Length: 137
Image (cartoon, rainbow, N blue to C red; front, side):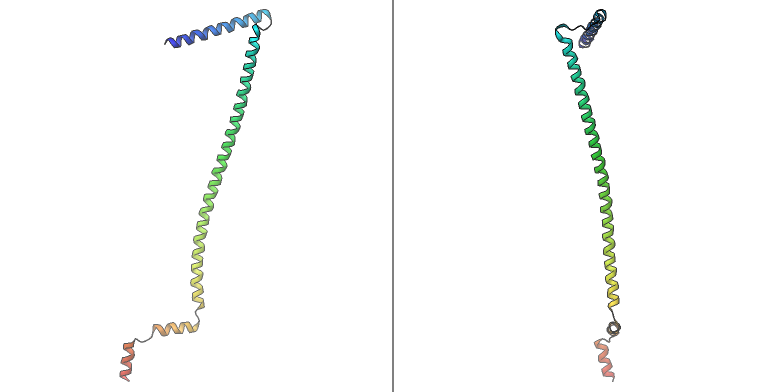
């Protein structure tokens, strides 16, 4: 509690001193500048304001730049994901197409003689049936 009271008293004293200096300046019609202190304070305030403006501009530009880069990165990442998914689907369709093309090519390559050979093989007699037929004749 005593620290808070010290701060309050110090702030009040500084405020009263500043008010007195402004009264003296108003009465004299010129600035109160003992030993060039006021000029030094003015310079320090101007320098501080310039630094404040410089750093806020710098950080606001860098934040905007970072925001732009983040946004561009997000959009590009989304486009990459869409392209990757489309590529996977196209590859799957191409595999299916190749499989169907092979099946179609294999069925089209079969000639009439291939059909006859396949029928002959499917209806061929077993060895036992052949022996029975030979014995029967």
